[in-house]
Image (tube, rainbow, N blue to C red; front, side, top):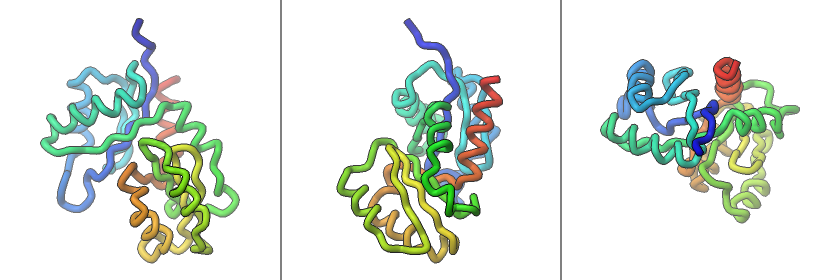
Length: 185
């Protein structure tokens, strides 16, 4: 028996960064619509999609990666969260007391939970005033001085965390939840 269609938040990694791997959001919506997805909405130009699907999030991600590679001609890593999972990310905000600028507060969405050793290493980092917190498959990072000079951002990229998922700033995270709620209404 097929499960009911639900809101899914689809995060594409590494598109529209620089001059490579470019795709317009209208073209992306058309491509996804051609594969039978419904209620497709995009946010910004960086691969943020809300759509409806009956597939479980992990199967949807794998299917989308194949479809996007065929349709775009290049590989795209896809991370999928359900509306409920994204709501938990927002509600469980571990750095709410310090992260006051949503453009300098990132959530790294990972495909799988990071290894316990990596979590211990991240928690042991001394990069004040920057902060990091790990919760399930998400890494929250606060960069009060911005990302350009961020020690924490450099360390996160060296640990391989960012290669296993994709980052979104807090403003985008909360906007995607709003879009999912609009589609569910």
